[in-house]
Length: 288
Image (cartoon, rainbow, N blue to C red; front, side, top):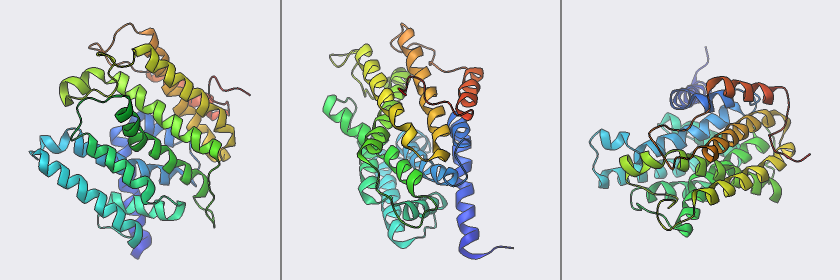
């Protein structure tokens, strides 16, 4: 029977995988398309992201935590994460899983700090303008794409590779597209349940069609660099890209600006997109 750090590492990875499976069936499906080299590392990254998001998006408040305590809990999670990056160990299993991945793949504080800064913004800012939107999206989504890119290039490797400018731009733009799609899907929930407006599409900010045009441009730019990724990453990234491209298309076709029904991709369509990616097809709309 294994003991010591190896067993603790596996328990931490299992905890991260449980969180991902519980919170997102679509993401859980997409991660299965990654090769074994990168799959647990991607789950480790997203598990930490999910926990931080839950601190600011409802469950912690439902547990009775006042705003000042929410901030302290988030600050403590950031501090524990940064300490674990240098120490290589955390008593928090999700933080431990993340830090083991980060240390192996070259994820450092320059990506961790902007993420927590954006999460902290959710405690302070109710309505975003174009500048604050871009800053928020960078920290909440683009740096997560950059973390995943570090995983794609460096998991299991003996030395750290530096991403090319093309891959860096593609990772950022795919993350931005994912975030803006979620903003459009959740307009009503964000406004009524959380009191937030990330896009300003109902005031004097960018029109809904302009946001969708930006999403389409970001998705196209990301699709163009998928062939540059390691082969064991392309299928999962393609499936995720095509899922959000399908959501964007449905949002464009839908004449609501955020009605009672949340736009979603039916399960059979999701399965078809995953199957298409499994067969090795590139992202929809990608130039060859």
